[in-house]
Image 1 (tube, rainbow, N blue to C red):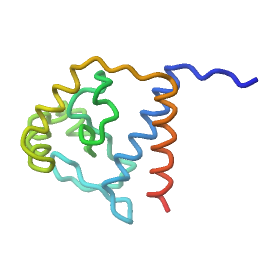
Image 2 (image 1 turned 120 degrees about the horizontal axis):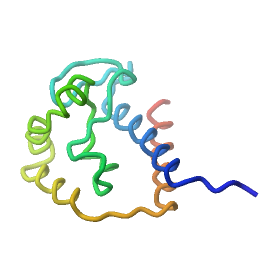
Image 3 (image 1 turned 180 degrees about the vertical axis):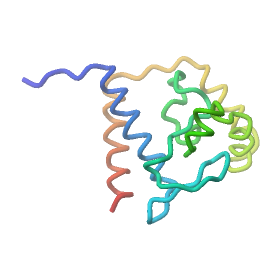
Image 4 (image 1 turned 60 degrees about the vertical axis):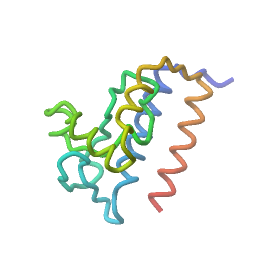
Length: 132
C-alpha cells in the first residue's frame, strides 16, 4: 500500500518543477537566461522564477504568463520589480495582460490533489523535453 502524499508536499514538488520549467523555458542551449526585469544574463540554475502576482494567489501561482525568469536582485531585493514586470508583460503579451493577471490572482482558485499531481506530471515532462 502506497503512502498518501500530503498536499503540502504536492505543492512543494509542483513549485520546484514549475520553477525549473520557467527558468529552462527561457534559456538557450547553454542554459543561459535573461532576467525579465533588468536583463542580467546568467545560468538558469542561478536565476529564479519571479511572479508578477504573488505566489500566495493560487490563481496565478503556476500561470506561465505570470511567471518569468528573474535574478535574485530583482526578485528578492527589489521585491519583484512589479511595475517593470507589468509594463513588460503588457509589451510582450498585449495591453491589459498585467491587469488580467491581477484579476485572475484575486479570484478564489482551488486545486485538488489530483490537479496538483497532473501539473507535476505535465511540467516534469516539459523539463525532460527541454533538457534533451
